[in-house]
Image 1: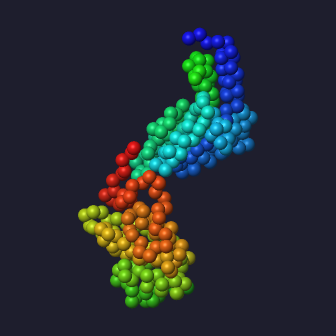
Image 2: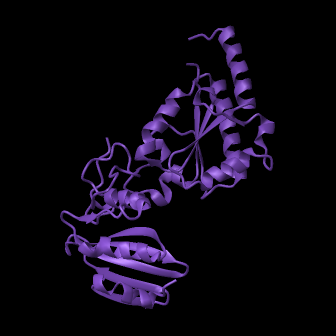
Image 3: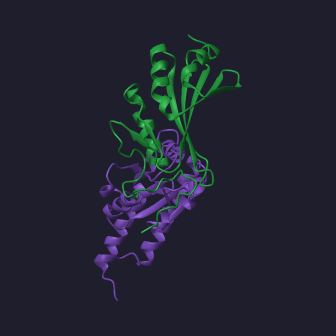
Amino acid sequence: MLKDTWQENLNRIRLWAQTRSPWLIHFNTGSCNGCDIEILATLTPRYDVERFGIKLQGSPRHADILICTGPVTRQSRDRLRRIYEQMPEPKYVIAVGSCAISGGVFHDCYNVVGHIDEVIPVDVYVPGCPPRPEAIIHGIVQLLAKMEAITQEGSQVD
Amino acid sequence: MISLEALTEQLANHILSWDMPEPARLDVRLVPQNLLPIINDLYQLRWGYLAAITGLDHGPETSEMEVLYHFCAAADVLTLRVHIPRENAALPSICSILPYAGVFERELSEMFGVIMYGAPDDSRLFLPDDWPEGVYPLRKDAKEPEDD
């Protein structure tokens, strides 16, 4: 199908806006808070990612990237799904920490469902227990590169 | 404050046996019927505070469980060990004497399936909303509920 110029230009503007100012929402799905503290360190003035336009949002409806920590517990599974569904398209997910990737030390616990991508699709995985703020920033940069690649391919046109 | 050695004499009427496995630790065995009287005595003596309640499942082959009430006073720890059967496990609630024991009892009861008689609140504390009835996750023979 031929794309019209109007759509192409809109995509270009959208990509520019997204990659230069990605807004995050942080959700703890059952983490021990180790990763959450590292995410806070990433956002606060020592690492200061706000200079790149990266900003924490209170509402999933205003966010582009869902940043998840911890294994998914039975109690948080539906809440995670609901938050993901509330986010506007295009939306991306970063899983931060060993538990978010594999369940980590909690993997066989009675109230743990498993890792994040058993419930929602994940775009970037940041390993570590907990990962350092540099690693989290690296993860976000990887995601921005991915966003650019996806939009330039034009496959993301929904 | 009464020393642990003196405490064994004070509580002698209500206990089966006692043991000091380490300095500043006193383990006391008692039957469930004596639980409320002994806690009342400790309360009257103003000895320490209830720090935690532990559940111990000795497994299906023993058909026995243990509930441990830990009281702390400075460096001293007094542990009341109550043996109860695994089937129809039940104990009297101590909330009438120590109201703050409620949260410990609720956790014990949801994790181990011990019924707390006379508890002011016996609802669940930590388990997920969709957790099935009658599955007690910290029992040795607990089966994980199926994922939907």
